[in-house]
Length: 250
Image (cartoon, rainbow, N blue to C red; front, side):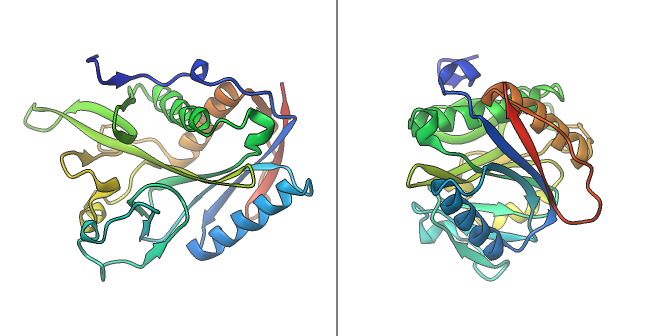
């Protein structure tokens, strides 16, 4: 591990345990409706009308532009729909085979440290990858979670496997993480992902971990419990729509 490697861990941030968090897993969601839902839910959390929420979903192929996005990093503007979004960061891709996790937490109740919260998101992703024997790291000056691996020619390379972008309004977070499970990696070629052109992208399947989305969801849940210090209780889904599961704080 070189000097630029910063392994994320739950110890990098200290939060007051949340009393309850809801967990929701759903099928592919329309992006604009997803953002509207997040904003509404966040407003309800501020007012004390709703529980904090983690929502796992997917989207049809699209690009999103964060508040720091540069026009020259959108290489193929007509390839997929492009959505301007209020999260931090630059351009990223969402599509089938990528698990998106939208996280709506009351950061004021958790110490109010946004930087610490970002470290928690990194730790969550790294702990999830570890369950599939994949070592994720964070790098100084590069947002997201990265992996070192050898390509087909045996050349050591470093690629991004997960992205994150956060928005905080009135102390409540929205947006969150995107973990590449089995997306079409060629779809990333229409942008400069997160404004970083020197490195590529990869996925669990590309690394030889041909896990299912359900297995990834389970790993995300286990890691979330460990990093954010909340317990969860499963509720079986009775149909194709998302169902909230209430989580009890440890």
